[in-house]
Length: 256
Image 1: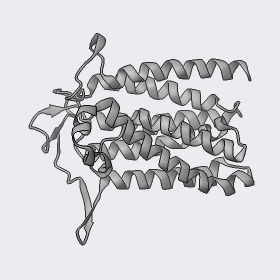
Image 2: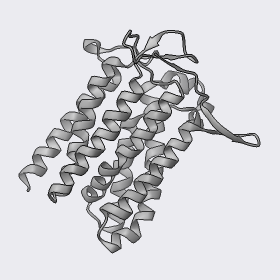
Image 3: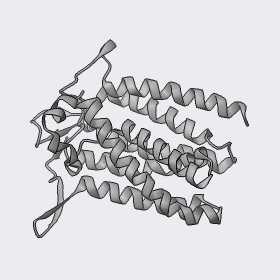
Image 4: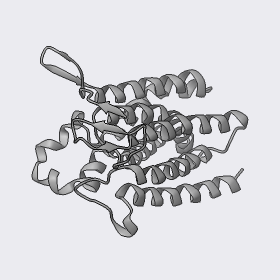
């Protein structure tokens, strides 16, 4: 058993607290940006435009992730505490909301610069597991999105939450949605050049499958609980995203 008593604050500069959650976004964006520029992008024109695209992505991730969390997972609380909405450094971001924000931001950028939206989304799909990995590790450090009770020998006690032995579900997600998904997608793209959008479809499929099953070990959001068929909100959204991914995959596969 592991005892999680990490401090969510990494360090402080005078009275300014720097949290692990914020650092995970910074590290994820920097590593993702570097990987795309150095490894994935061969077109020099797109390389020059990519820095501007990152700005669009950051806005899409922050706005989409936060708005998604506020309205999907905890709308009643935030509508009663409007000032809390901006406190993203304390946690509370929706992955699926961030995905929608990324799609909107990418659409706007692709239209402005006349670049294939699916080419850009494929770059995001290939590099975003890096950010997911860092994000889930920060969830673990923050003692948030923790797992359900269990007696497995690798269980974790989140001291900031309670004294129960729980699944370290954040670590499961870091491994499957981060490391393994990164390896799978980059292995596929290394073997053959695929039609723009093919990798994006596989990202949606694999992420949704991983997330759906890991959710069985993750404690449901207290304010929502379990819904239809005893599924969590994350599982229900993952099913919807999975269907979207399969439709896109079939369309792109037939276009090869």
